[in-house]
Length: 389
Image 1 (tube, rainbow, N blue to C red):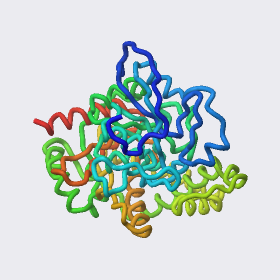
Image 2: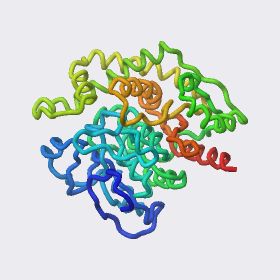
Image 3: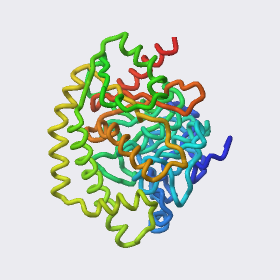
Image 4: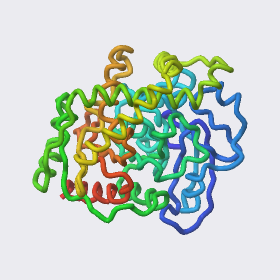
């Protein structure tokens, strides 16, 4: 390994030489994804000590190995995948190679860090409410969240199954596409992406550094077909409340019995979220599902037949490691407002790092229609190719 950034929990060397879209490419998988013979720690030592080694690989691992990839490790993560910052009180916080004084983002922290540090060619994470998108933005790498249901989740420790998906990281879009070719089904729609929908809500409170870095990309988008998109404050307020209830109810359904039986010690934020989750009722979950079904009509109308949403991945650079719990919680709220659009409605999203002249990274995102993951990656390739000219 080139440098110790605290990204890896286990070092492996699995795979065979062979042809395929990922021939010879090295990768790691997050600690909630099963690798045969190894315990999936799920970011917590007590979880590791109360669970047996996996009897088989998760299917996502087998697909990557079959495509020629070489698995070289498992990567650290936030506790139980229930955070967005990358800090873990048990295993430590992986070092953000792009900004060592700032959080790496989570919960797929080690996967993003491993890619950003050049330890591997790509890395696999999971994304429930931003867990691939936040670390991609904070570490300055490309990050992808797949459509809900596009990639099987067998052999992956669940958090909120109606929201959980596989995601991945790479330093270039060619590799992002290679991973997609190995994992993704064919797109469900023949319609291409021809119209950018600039989400005003997402750009209202961005840092000045983000606005400056994003200006060339926005100008490029406005040189083509585009329109403005807007979701009012009431929508975000209601959507966030329902989304949190949905995630929390499912998180407690996934892990409440284990928590009650084992009394694990959690970090402050995760402890509070599970305490809240334990009190969310089935009626609140049902209300969240009903809200989502109705709100989906607004999101579908925004996208139309050929549109893609454009927004900041996060509206700010990675938070400093020295920021207070109150400051971090406020930023988590800001991130969740943006992340819930893809998460709540099962949509694919790709995070594109922006040039920042040596400053801490920021990133722009494209969100597409459900089941059009391959087209979204291809769109990002075309767009970034134009930006380089």
